Image 1 (cartoon, rainbow, N blue to C red):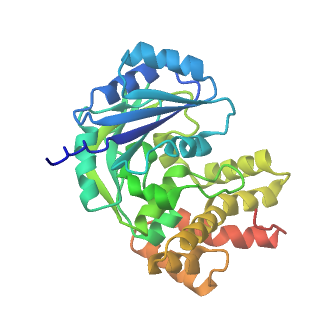
Image 2: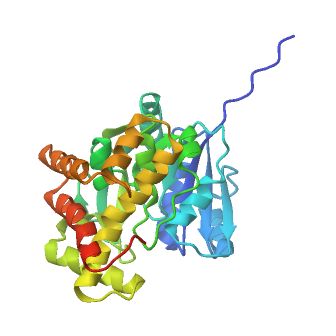
Length: 331
């Protein structure tokens, strides 16, 4: 007598939570609960305050056994909190989706994105940008697009909340690289790992509302409108908060840290983990021991193809030079 076939492993939704606004959190959890692709587990990673988050979860989804809390007393911030959540995902999970605590998914989000993983390691959808609480549609779409790996290093196109990726990607992505300050971003890192392994894709379909409210650090709509002056001011303020740098040195420090320095950390880490020519080429262009001529050619080529903005190209090329000239060292 043959043994019965075991049921396929479920996918996983990893939601990072920190003092979630109850109304938005409830709406988001219920939108996940209502997914038409229903074979999943949702791990809610509480960055402190696990009891409060658990109570809100139960109020929102009742005794739905697909939802669970992974609570931690130590607050580590969203980057390491997502890492802690992904560490809870079993090695045989076929797919993983990331979730913010305050958006709202369309019922068929997972049903649309998961099948696209047949031809890419990480897939993104689009989002509609909506304000809260008035519900004004700021943008009908986020217009995410798939770009080459070098362009992705320079300018991230993949927001974690919009993405689904193969569970096998975690073998490369975990643990996350450690980098000084706030420049480290989980979705940028995951997208880069996918770019040099199984590839990236964007499904041009709105799969959720991206909710903008007063607690957003930098909203989707606001980021797109920042000019040079606002960009430099934000860079300066970030450097002042994280170092003792002031004036031009602070601007130089931050220009380097949020672009060239973070790029170094990512490409050097992935090149050490992935035996692939694509990873080695990225390290040669953007790593700590990069070749300056290749860096210049790669950045200029991406700008000419329209894959990155002129601002991104200038920030990357100027950042490390300016910081070095003002006496900086790699963080």
